[in-house]
Image (cartoon, rainbow, N blue to C red; front, side, top):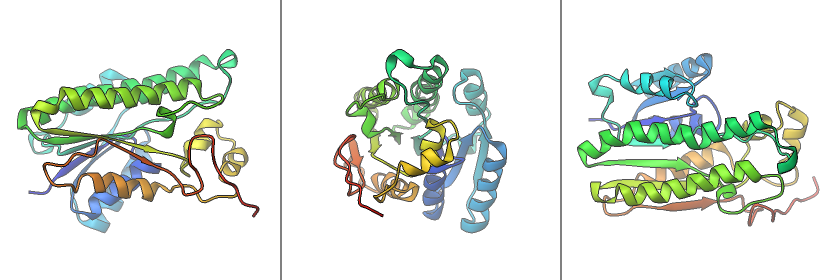
Length: 254
């Protein structure tokens, strides 16, 4: 029987690349996101390219009722989820705390923390019932160290770090693996969202160095699931070669 992976935020960036990587390796994919057109496009691509089963669930992960309805809609053959990838997340704004936009704060907390918790709360019991499964949380270097104007985004990712550690402890006796993957600078829609659609500003974030790609993150996300049953990778920090920490990055003249 083919294994099943559920990926949140699968319409773009890390989530999309992760879905492709798992499908390429024979997984059945449950892909979720808010943008129906992109979900449908990915669903067709995975089916046609990899001849795998795909289930697309459109919902807003910030809304508990929608998350519950989506998970409850799973038929028995889709409830056997081997891997949950809590990928949905965003950074909104880059303001000092005293100039912060409350709506940005709400979006980050509701998506990065509460959305991850909603999915984990609904999927983990299925894994506990089987005594097997793997939960992978996509964190960030921003969950390891703070940087100027990162305040609430860093706070949300520090929460992911702590929740991942707590989940690992809580599910230890049930034989469930729990992993955090914490990327540094990566070129996805991330900066475009953070800068509210300002393409020029978002593009210049990556001037002078080669950032991580979505495919790089997909590679390590799949890799942690290939370990033997007795091996769990708790935490994996992955950076561009040009970046040593959140604020130490070498840019070359281009």
